[in-house]
Image (cartoon, rainbow, N blue to C red):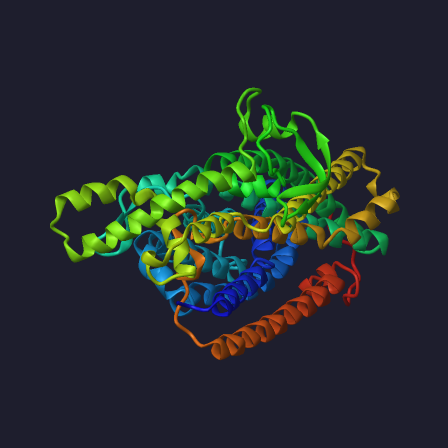
Length: 522
């Protein structure tokens, strides 16, 4: 059996690299469509300022994209190095969308990014705009296939376990692709990226306006970002609600933990606005309820109950007991694969095989299982409640704060008086990191809330890791954190440097700090 320390270090290493990588992803997703909008304005109006906007913001996009690729490549290698049994167990399904992402999306994205930067003088306006559009499509396709893979981990469909190969095998590719969890996760995640890109442009444009420099450039950038950001943050909230509804159907355990819902309440359930979860006694020491809200959001009905954690644990206890039988039958079937009776009995209980495998954390053989260990395994199916509860609420609070900011920015853009609202410009400037914080919190809720599973209900995390030494994990973890921190510092330095320089970095002679000191074209 692997040690708990080995599992925790493997999880920590993957979490660290994933969270670092996800610092770059949202900005890439959001900036690319802003570039499409700006370049479309140039093609339609012929005004050079829109070309300058596309080139300047594209330069910052390019810096972020390069470092995002650097941090992302190592993630896929970790599946083979740190999660070897996971790769063996589900590689038939999980590998397909990742391979498509590399062959279709990443190559498309990378090719057109090259044309975007080096094709300004070689392509016509319309041709270059098409390049920018295809670059945006490639970026979003890349996100789609990665989130299809991740969505399958959250809600495994279109596959079944084969006792001959001792692994999950793909049975319906289209079910994997159109998995409701994957689709909801995709639209919610890319919308959050759009908000991040809009906030980036809005914040830097606000800084220019506060310093009274490159005003026409900043005005137009601010207005585009305000409109795009408002539409995007509305999408995030609406699609986030849809994502939560999908979770309520596919991962009731995660939803109950997110809401600190220990007891099954009469429908429609109340929403815990504030709560202080007591994990040991499985209750909240204090909770402030809003009646009906959780039931309406989670079930879209007035009469459907949402199970509480205690009832989920009791239900999972039954599945653990059935899972023990499934593991025993699997072992017998492996010894006698031609036995039709064993095959029939195993097929009847194999859906609970994963719950039986939870006990492998404590015993080597199902003969050692006791009722107390079954109780413990059932309790293990509930992730820690307090981190999920507060992370989710902070993410939601930031979402509504961003809605207010973008709503006011758009309103004053329409009125044309945002330059005379220094409080709004300062708010936009100081809120720059908030979309990243919200994105990281959302990723944490999605992934931590899946525990103790790598594949929800199918493969426990403690069985997924490679056989590595603790010392090697400490070394590689330190190396990754050190290297990624260096990359983050490099990104921050380059971003700050070019943002401070502003559109003058284009060398057109039309902006602040340039030799000719000409004003920007209208």
